[in-house]
Length: 331
Length: 254
Image 1 (cartoon, one colour):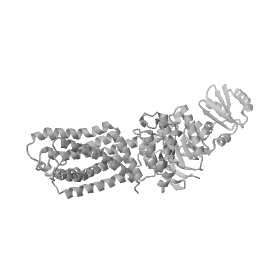
Image 2 (cartoon, chains in turn blue, cyan; image 1 turned 60 degrees about the vertical axis):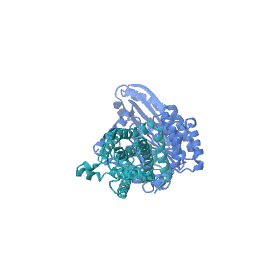
Image 3 (cartoon, rainbow over the protein chains, first blue to last red; image 1 turned 180 degrees about the horizontal axis):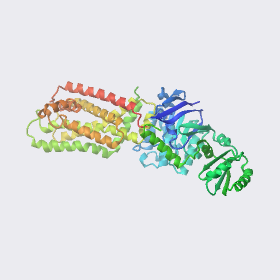
Image 4 (cartoon, rainbow over the protein chains, first blue to last red; image 1 turned 135 degrees about the vertical axis):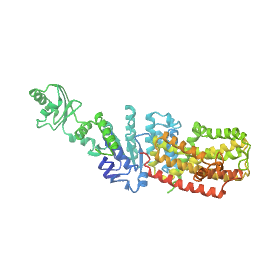
């Protein structure tokens, strides 16, 4: 295990931003921390990269303790922060040069390495203009190139594609994949984009309220859901209808999401007619139906009871944080 | 632990940014040059009385050099706050380099820019009639200038570790530097002032620095120059240590 955490906890006042997180990442893996804003992903990363001291628990990166051997940890990691961390007043190349010196990249290799990274992130022709004239996507790419410049064993990507358009995001995924394949870099990323985690990650940990609620490969997580998902749109209150559906023994799970009733069943195509008949008998007017295989999003809903981009959820989390901050953590 | 690579990078970055930000260079020099011309020539022509054995211009130039050093140097805390606000500080903080080296790099960067502005002020004053007694003493004056710069860089860095917003920092430094200038022997001799004011001036590092420069360039100092040098060096050691400590302790606003 190149990364190992045991009961990692960070408390601000009485508010536990990270609450006893334990996981391991093996070398060469792309590992994702997936969760809504305010779930504790970034706080976890900040502890692992030695910028924030944990309240309790342990973590080791490449064998080095994040509490007592910060320097060794720092030597082995590269970080791409969620917020920009470039010097706008310098050119792209200068940003990379400074980074290379700070990480003691051998002088003879320095320029070659910088050129290689510029090529990787497709910024060769923009290398000598000031970063303040870069677009958002270019800045992000430069940061990723910079994070890799010193060939870290572990690369931390905190929301690597936040604020990027769909096309640039796709592009970024390809870079990240290529890096992982070509250099064997272990990558740990946080995201609140389900598709990102699904596409990139070998394993995903769902984080909610500072805790890991599920951890496995995206495929296994989906398979564990079992069967198919039948989504129903009904006339009237879905709450009343779902109570009735809950009486059916072969329905494995029932949840409401966006006013749709999601029923998890085996052999969905055969069960659908039965469900419609059941609905008619019990006075539920079905407007429309849909059958699909469970997505990672469904898994997320199952474990947390909410969608990841649930605006209300975000708002509540934000309020929770703010409240904790104002009241000194009284919850 | 001292990492020379980190010191070099932090210094070099400061130089590049300084060279590129022309408005900043001009902004820093405007005030001292106005004081030099306005007070040195304008007010100086009205003062026929000799001060400390020379003309008013002769008296005031070391004071204005001190002022230029103070304002340039204390503004180096500005870039710390800037870096924290715009994220670059995090990039430096996760590199395998000691916090002390980063502070040392900033101090060197700040003192270089401060020295540049001090030397520009010196050259302008030579053009308008300031006379240096012993050419070789310029070296000694440079030592004093450097120490003044280090004192105010340290003060700037200490403030920057406590204050997190740029406006607040700007306000507090100007609140601090103006009184320090007027409660020093920079613009006028303090001998006319009540005893209390004179005693306060003994706690003002700027007084020792300006007195030292005056002694080196003009040949007349109020205190023995060794005293000036000793006290100022002590200020540097104490304040720089606090600056290193404060910077290491602050979690860099992350």
